[in-house]
Length: 336
Image (cartoon, rainbow, N blue to C red; front, side, top):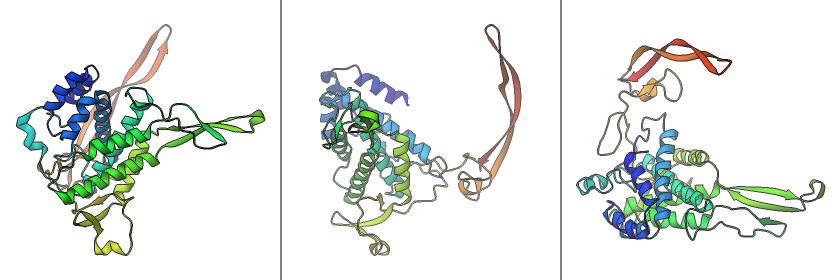
């Protein structure tokens, strides 16, 4: 986690609403509605900030073997840029970027992560006015425990994250809001129902059940699967329409991530688009991160070096751990 984000988290965890108004008014890139939420719900802001950081971490994991490895979010996408109060860098936050399949994945991942984080904070009692969801679901079983309040978390995520989409770029706005909704839906469908039986001799005459958050790794995998199945679209008057090649095969887009632009090769760095290229990237001879796939036909450089590590450790009475030093030859391949 970056130092600036850590500072924001520490700040919001210790300030009163009045102080939050001051820092929220200085934060770059927030819309008026986001500033209002920022100043009135500092406890919820901690969850939202953590959610975006969680999305970045999971995005890097899911795309670790791709040419585009989500090393950083595209310009203008972050809710909380690193230099979040520096007016001199504001121009960096509003840069345009291609509306590619990868950008669609970022929006889906971020939306689901923010919803996940808010739900987690709610169930832990860290957000005022966000109690557990204890709604009764059926006659033969009762709702028990502290289930994450999805209605609150999904609602606040929609309000805060969708507010990022300002008027002026309607095509991208339609795409981003749609992909935000897909991310929230993935989060909602990832919830697990757990039950405990009550009754004599295991008859399970009565059950108590509760909703449980999955790990975000499970959610991230589902977002990645949606990325693989993302659909290209064109827009007309703000309404989404599939390209002709897709019309006959797909009539409903609500469950799919969508994108407007074809992805570049990602072989070379492009600061404006926010990706670093594949030069000096580690690769392997085989597998999803193979040099053939990552290095874009530029070849690779083999580096060989010795690495020391502790090995053959034994516990000696009393009380000492004695280890030998082992030397390993390590081969590392870097894209040219």
